[in-house]
Length: 140
Ligand code: IDP
Ligand code: MG
Image (cartoon, rainbow, N blue to C red):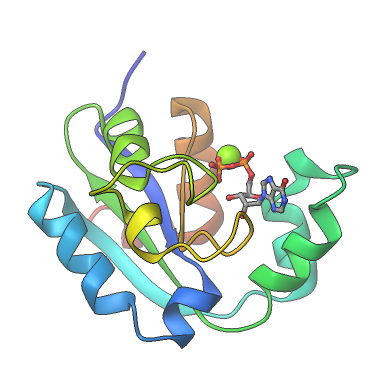
């Protein structure tokens, strides 16, 4: 199954260090349409819920602290086969393993501070876009 949308997040470290513009440029140049976007700051409890699938893993508490540490930019991106296409543009979770030309290779500074999030499945694209955007915000 595939879908034409996915959820993207520019993580706090990348926003804080001025990488929002360069990351948006890479997204545009790769042919994604930004169909919804906002800057917000997650509470700790919201970050816990967003990453609930990772609860109990060794990096979970630190990830939740990090993701609630400052503003993030959340977006709905549209493109054919968006989930898979955006995972390719992001690159691997560890920026040191991400291929040149990917967002994480360009702007990730550690496994945790890897600049961006992208939905990993069609099911999660639905769940994650609904978490951040109301129906009227998602379909401008
Ligand atoms: P993904 O973002 O590439 O889908 P996941 O395994 O879903 O990777 O992990 C979610 C996020 O948790 C990662 O993007 C990264 O920020 C963080 N993370 C994952 N594994 C580790 C780790 O081993 N150490 C520190 N942070 C991690
Ligand atoms: Mg993931």
